[in-house]
Picture 1 (cartoon, rainbow, N blue to C red):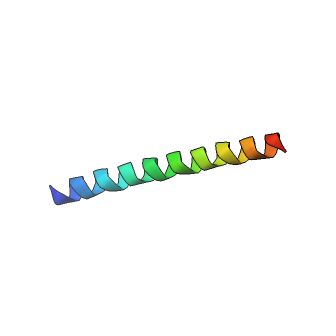
Picture 2 (picture 1 turned 45 degrees about the vertical axis):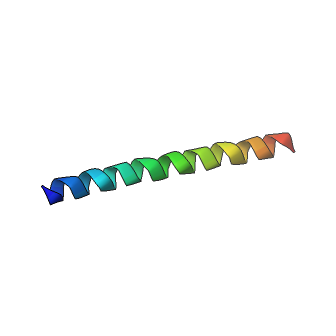
Length: 35
């Protein structure tokens, strides 16, 4: 059970990290386009 839960947590953490990176990248492009 704990192994499955750990796998789910790591998957969620990966998705969350990817979402944050994508958001930061979009924000970076917005800053570049404004200049």
